[in-house]
Image (cartoon, rainbow, N blue to C red; front, side, top):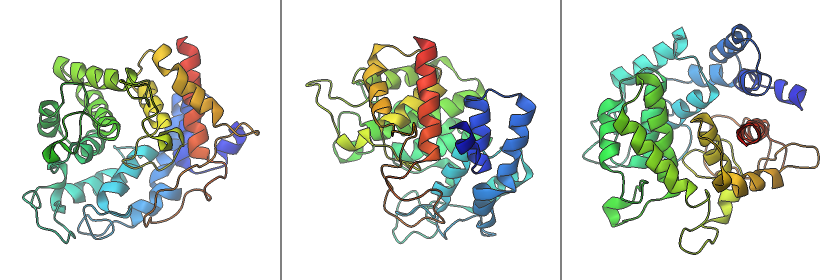
Length: 308
């Protein structure tokens, strides 16, 4: 299994070395450094235009735009201190605005990329990416703190009348707050806000309605990578692991979902490929074994086992 995972791209290999094999830091760093010069990371970096954009736009409904490419580079683990990362982020900071390449007009079109726009689901992702790559995201974090709902989460549809949180928006904001805390050391206010958001998910066992116990969305029980802004149980568990949340009975059923998705060979399949143009495919078609899903599932199971 480990050999199969290591027979892949540097963006997967270094995480296997860190999270599953627990290798020496020097070897992990050396493998991670290859993301900028080999494989998927290098391919994406080479596609950035001189104006800082990928795909000719800041954001679109496909996956080739600046927003989504930066998210992928973050999830790959591109070293923020690498020359390639500094150059790419510098171009975005200097040139990219939210209206670039967009066919619509909006009040936030002239916002610089790392100033964010209006929806907390998007802004949470922008905070995660900006903080990861060394941008001061404090103003946007402050905005997100003010948008937290009484039930503990966030919802992109508040401006359209929503009064309760959504899992999808909440996981995007939580990932952003976690990266911000790592980058800055955090504050009591940010930490408390993040814990309230985690409680919102945990009180619902990561996929059930608090009121009835029903499964909210069956698609959350099937795993994707890239998952983009979409929510699923594996993404939520991997966030909790990354945030070093102590696992308890509230995640046990979700862990059972992960175990139940394992194939007879001990691997996890790619169960969803979200529609939309991408620069390239990293894995095979739906239903085939996925290294990304297998890596994330194995480290989640390790986290749960060690915390019990």
